[in-house]
Amino acid sequence: MLVIPVISSKGGVGKTTVAANLSTALAERGFQVLAIDLDPQNALRFHLANDPGACEEGLLAAASGQLPWAQAMRPAHGGVVLLPFGTVDDERQIGFEHDLARHPGWLGDTLARFALPQDTVVIIDTPPGPTVYLQQALRAAHLCVVAVLADAGSFATLPIVERMVDKYCRPRADYRGSAYVINQVDPGQRLNHDVFAMLRARLQPELLGVLHLDASVSEALASALPVRRYAPLSKAAEDIAVCADRLLARLVTHPPAHAPPQRQETTQ
Ligand SMILES: Nc1ncnc2c1ncn2[C@@H]1O[C@H](COP(=O)(O)OP(=O)(O)OP(=O)(O)O)[C@@H](O)[C@H]1O
Ligand SMILES: [Mg+2]
Image 1 (cartoon, rainbow, N blue to C red):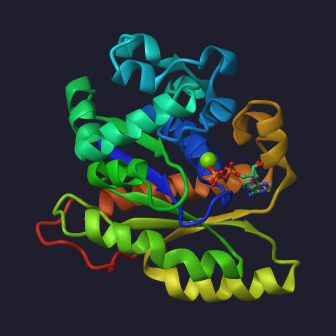
Image 2 (cartoon, rainbow, N blue to C red):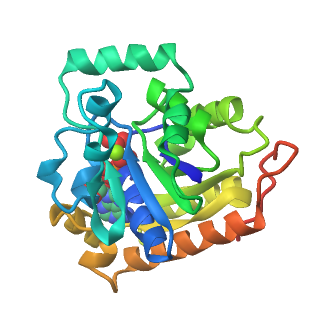
């Protein structure tokens, strides 16, 4: 089992988009994929679930014993299994966050209890920035996909998640490194182009790929479909396929190390 959280310092940079579309791309490539929404926004369902309306109960209800885990899992596009966060009120959410803070290894322990088949990839959508959800996901992670926009704000805030990855992931021998996806790349915009060049230079050893700014992405979301299903010939669908193939290549060429890796992976 491989646990891959999709993380970012800033909000709205495409984590949920990347988590959903990587999930279906990996399922298409023959993996069992469990996509977990570890974000109280409960938005992963709109990209992935066969029936987003049937995702009102999910992880939080199962974690508190109100719903069997098997019933919390929902069928999703491409054969992916989705564990939605569930729609919850503020008090239940805050109570859950206190529980997570008290049990830092809760997610890893829970996944271990699922006894998932060996070829399962667990993709985890997370809220932006440093949260208890991110701490949980990083403690269980074998590889992190980091979403970043080609803008000055993303560039400036990158160290926020990088510090957390350094703290919770890199010291572990089973951590295979980070994989950056630069999102909403638009070569036609001068500033975007310049920041993209800076980001690419800074992230190069761990850069997974890019996702171009493409109206198909937001249209696919409006249609509650993965991009490849909504617009299979779009630039975005091609970008996601490239990222998925490179991710698989990374996993083959970078098995868990005995010594903690220090950002020295080559992906390009
Ligand atoms: N490459 C793209 N081209 C066009 N629109 C995009 C692209 N990537 C993301 N979007 C749009 O940007 C918005 C934010 O994306 P998304 O919800 O995936 O970000 P997020 O990082 O998960 O946000 P949050 O931090 O709130 O969880 C969505 O409306 C999505 O459709
Ligand atoms: Mg999101």
